[in-house]
Amino acid sequence: MQWRDLGESVQAYMDQHALMEWLYFILLLLTICFLLHFIQRAFIRWLPQKASSVYIFELWKRVLKATTRLFLVGVALFFSVRFVELKPSVESLLVKVSMIIFWVQIGLWFSSAVTYAADVYVRRRKDSDASVTTVAGMTSFVLRMLGIILIAIIALDNIGFDVTTLIASLGIGGIAVALAVQNILGDLLASLSITLDKPFVVGDFIVMDNFMGSVEHVGLKTTRVRSLSGEQIIIPNSELLKGRIRNYKRMMERRVLFNFTVGYDTPRDTLTEIPSRIRTTIESIEKTRFDRCHLSQFGEFGFIYECVYFVLTPDYNQYMDIQQHINLDLISTVQELGAEFASLLQTKASPGLTSKLT
Image (cartoon, rainbow, N blue to C red):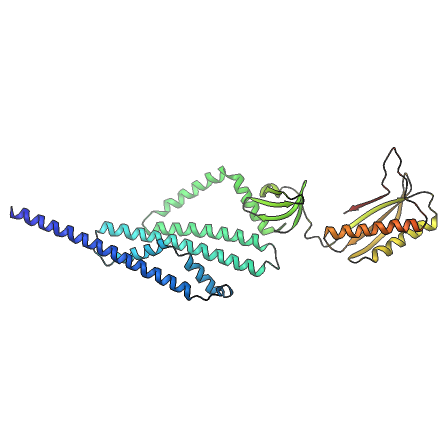
């Protein structure tokens, strides 16, 4: 009977001791969490208000803001188990949980740092190179994905998981996934090709097949183009690179060819005078370069002139203003010289004045 009482007393003491250890553990955990949270807030307030002008301060500020409360709990958990006596199995479990939280936070810090570096790169170079937004976005995504995968493998290795088997499984599974989502991978590779080769960048005016518009966004799977009529055209990247793309944003100048026809009753002196008048008109207009103007052939309704000039700007509205000015002056010139544009017959409409942009 005495031995039984003694055993019950020892068991009661052990239960009471374990309860006290857990109470100490919880109290210590809350205290460390509070201190870490206080230190985090103090560092954020200490950083300069104009941190955006000093990149290192802005980076530290973003890293601190990316620090989650779960990480603070994980750090407190890791240190708390060092000062209390818990069961070895429980202590080992708590340490593993704290290590998982730590590596998750490492991934968040890495992602925040890469995103900030991409933002700084875009801010520095977006004025001189419109393609930096696409390049920075793609590079940031790839680096974050690779970083997260690497951190996950290191985290699993630290908690005792056999990563060799995992890596082998990922290799086999990756092949199966690649075959299942080959269309998506095709768009991703096409996006990488657009990023590196730069056939167009955000802001360029492009024409492909029957669609035209300004590029608004180059994504991982699709490219978004704002058409002239206002709607947004969404095109898969792989389909976009299969066709021919005309990039008008990179046009340095426009070559314009236009024709007009005067009647067969026009005197020879007038026919000779018309090209020189047109040359004078074109050379008097800013941002133009005269090339040639000739009586090129005998048409069905009269003498056909062919004229070529260059507009020294890619802006389409300026080209139309210049062509309108030339057309009006041409009408005045023909009238002043006493000539007439060729008449239109009812059987076939032959334009008296046409233009073609090449």
